[in-house]
Image (cartoon, rainbow, N blue to C red; front, side):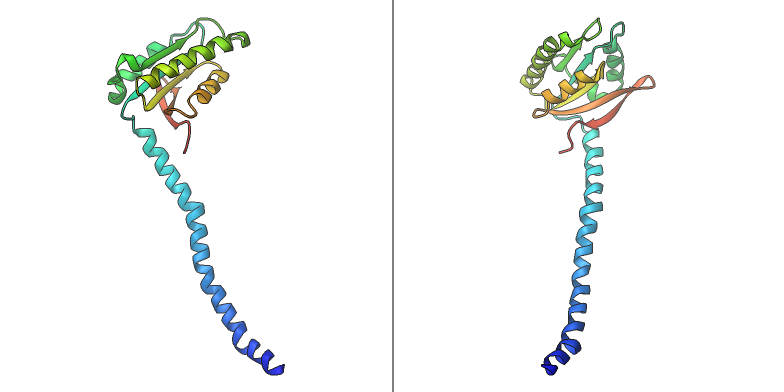
Length: 171
């Protein structure tokens, strides 16, 4: 029994330490790639997908601010971006209301939004550039409607122009 303990102490303990250190290298390498490599790939993909307009892009303008004409501002912005300026009129949909959105208006808005989504998808849109002005509940409805459809790129008004915030979905 003493010979077995001596063998374990002299050979197996140091061998276990060496093998543990050798195994630690791929474990740390894999952890680093999973944690930091995935984030880097996601950021690269996000930047790439935000710049790509799509093969058959479309525009959806939801203007629910009473007294403002967001569609005119979007048209001005659209003329300045070559990829958006080439989008034909049959793939541009505007949903506008001239009064404040109330909870009773949501079913009608949802029907109108569903019809707009059907029109854009029927036109073969693979990427929808979404310009929103109004309550956040309408944006949530748009997100729910297009969750399984075409890629949706979000735009926000920023100091006289619009800024692309990238895709609604990251996967």
